[in-house]
Amino acid sequence: MPAIDLARLRKQANRLADFFFLPDEFMKHLREILDFYVNYTLRTKENVAPGSNLKTYRTPPAVLTHIENELKTVAEENPHFALELADVLWDEGALETRLLAAFLLGRIPPQEERLLPRLTAWTQQIRDPEVRSALLSTSLTRMRKETPNQFLTLVREYLHPERTRTWSNGIQALLPMITDTSYTNLPPILDLVEPIIEEAPSTIQNDLTDLIVALYRASANETTFMLKHILTTSENPMTVITMRRMSSSFPPPLQRELRELIRPQALTVQRPAPEEPDDFVDETAFAEVKPKGPARKKKMENSRIIYLHGLDSTSQSGKARQFAEKFPGMVTPDFTGSFKERMEQLKPILGRKKNWTIIGSSYGGLMGTVFTSEHPSQVRKLILLAPAILQTPDGIYHDPANGEPLELSAKSKQGLQVISVPTIIIHGTADDVVPLEPVREIAEKLFTNLQYIVVEDGHRLHKAFGELDWEEILE
Image 1: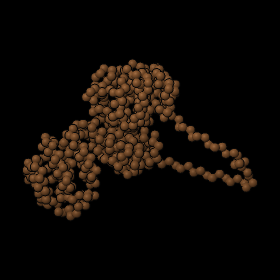
Image 2: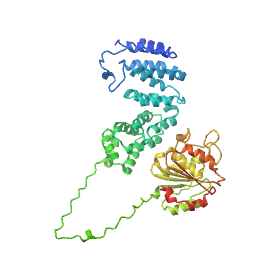
Image 3: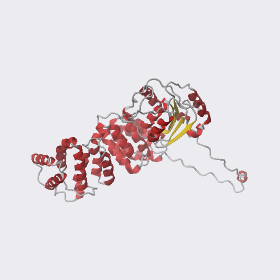
Image 4: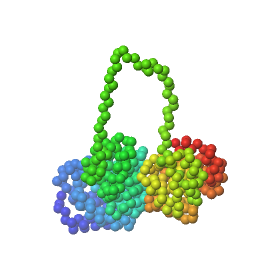
């Protein structure tokens, strides 16, 4: 390999950029540059790209960096051509060309509808660790910075409970956002990763270690609180075991904070009872054996049931009092003010606890829907009574109190996310406050696990309340 003359390399990269709009010519000149800088001192592919199954030119990283610098501006100004060139580079199939393809994806606006299909398809095709890392970091550069909610929606898909094979992708995609000091909205990320950390699969132990260390460096207090909460509430025995294995890589202060919670528990050895003399007769052994009765249902934890009243109602309304009588110990708080103010009052009540059953009536149903959309891992079931989930003709959710666009948190600025939490909606045919059919049309698109119960009643559901089996609905 000739010594790298930076002036000459810059000139070569600049000339290559002139062929940006001619993919075939671009590839011809790119191959010439890559061949020119082949490092023959690296005699095997394993020396330059360990674990890779791609052909490689064994090109020094500085060469690709200069090419990327020359392509950056023209790619951002011409996203359509950048996408076409990225396709050609990807199809070439070499390590260097696929890294350049991943770089070009990162210069395309996140609004480009062809971006995510490319990213999804390519991450499924590739096994090379370097290219995979580039797709999950470099290719998502603009989306992370310009549309963080869209980015978190993508990560949420990676971290879906039933898609364990893509959990590693989700974690790798999050790491650049966590380490970005300009990004300070950590709670949405903590909500996303908490179930994954609690599940603690050993197959992604290294990814989990990188994730926890990055989170701790971004916010030591929030990360420590989350980990302690997981360790004290998780029923999964692998959580403590995996955490113990990873802990040696944690920063020393975090190790000290978690030491007692991950310490191996001493086993209790039960000694066998002394044998009775041979002439001892256990009379109970001959007693009539009574058949066991049906298994008792697990008692519902009422302290994790919350009722959210309507716009002009209070915790002393008829439904609130009846719920409190049926389920002693459930939470029935009061809410006042605007929608945003009510959501700010709700979040400290629910905290970071899980397994909430949320019952929302009318305006409270809208509150419960928004919270569940933003924090699905905290909600086990959502019960909505004539919920005020309404949209304008252009699909924007609006506040029934004033008809204006709903003032959502930063987490939901792009709109509510599809909700997979089990949801039951109870709605009356004679509701003259929140019309049944528009809400049902919206709900069938918003909820993927929905049961819609239509009753002959008005908005307040006075008649239906006494006829419905609430134990079964909440079970």
